[in-house]
Length: 196
Image 1 (cartoon, helix red, strand yellow):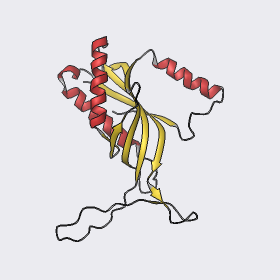
Image 2 (cartoon, helix red, strand yellow):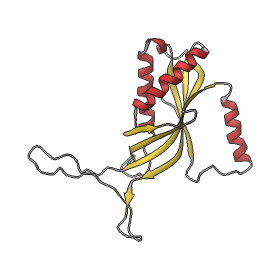
Image 3 (spheres, one colour):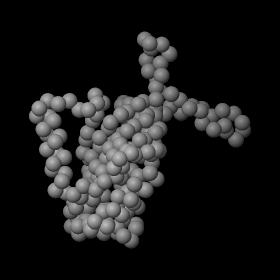
Image 4 (cartoon, one colour):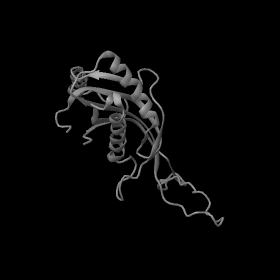
């Protein structure tokens, strides 16, 4: 059914601020949310998109993740101690006793997402503007990796990039690698994932 859809452009969500994301991604690893937490959010967004009459012929594809900042919510008792996650108490039980603490690791993130737009027909300028407006509304309503979206970038929070223009973005990235320029921040990380 969706095999005939091609990439017609990319939707960029700039500097999405996520608070309280789950940072325990498996029994062995912790500190950053699992990639499936991000992919699940965009899969849900794609289903929302296809449920609307205006977008039923389009869907979201692969997702590029770029992490600008990650702040695990941890503490340590002294400067030589191990870090542990901040814990929160759950609501009081029906009998008035306090509930047991379930270990949860949370973090605050600033992420940029580049999402493929798949479809058969090119979008008109009016459709692109509507997609940008709808995309901004969808991302603000969406929980991502268990966290809540609080804000987006002040300038160009959501923008549409033509398929041809993505090559210039890739060339800039390759040029940075070639000339040995470090990323803007030490913790910047980028990864591309398929959501199918």
